Image (cartoon, rainbow, N blue to C red; front, side):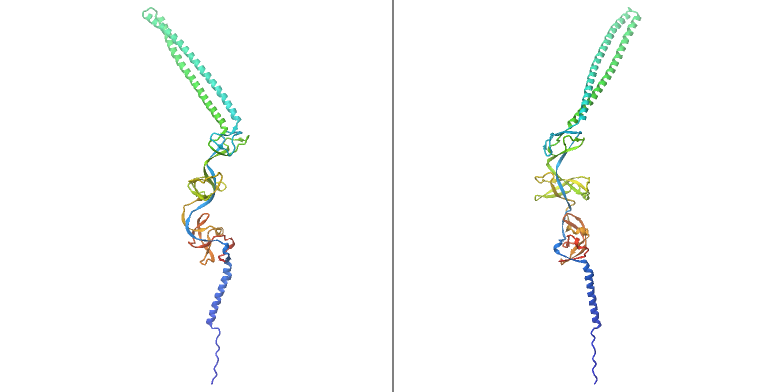
Length: 418
């Protein structure tokens, strides 16, 4: 009887070895991803230290916040028409004035001397004109007397001529005597005509001379009146009723012509003047709407004028109140205005936050469905206002994103919220 031979059972069949090897490779891959990938790109953060916002679909209004200063809608700048030194002050800044009230008085010695010389010249010219008129009258009288003598002599000669003509007809005088009388008469007729023509020309010349003197005197008088008006202009008067809000006229100070020495404000109506960053100069124009809140109420404004000059990277605009203005406004009061740059539209929106400083609006941390993990996600943003950004690409309504600052996150691809 033969003995049975014990067959040794193999402990590690090839199939089992292959399975174990596959499992080991998978574990190694997981360890690699955990140690070398996730360990470098994952950061644990405390949920209380971040701000999570939800992407929503809603109305969007593009506006910018600006600070406006309440100013009177009507202001008048006091300027000197003539230069001079301040001699008197009749008012002080802050005083209420009426139209025509004197505010300050200048003195100008050169102007006073100029007026004195002009007055002396005017008096001299007036005396010359008066003497010329007197001479004209005397000369006219002399001409009349001269012409009267000529006409009298001519009348006598005509009588003699008529008598000789009758006698000559009856042949009572010789032809020679008649011809002599006739020639004398004809000479006197011609002489009268010559004298009359000469007198007319002389009178016309003297009349032109007189008219020239009269015109010159009128010009001198007009210049004198103009100079006296300049003298009157040395008294600075209020052109309108209002409040003298500024006065720069110290006694003894010299003011050049055209110098700004004060301002009068009309206090029955106000406007708002604001300065805006020059980046918006092409988007701000007359008619743009604005609003501000004061004492629990919202008031509307409208841009009336845009000043094109840019100073210190800013330009100015004037805004008028639409409807009733707030009661008890004060000149110089500051208002926080929301100036609209576009119309109200429907858009996809996320809240503004510090994430923009790091990402420039190109990506954001998007939370997954569990709300515990946030990963980098590419986005594209458009318009914005102080409250929200407009989302153009990368997000949808209901998405939850981290909008607080990313400064402490480094280059992490993944955040785990604790």
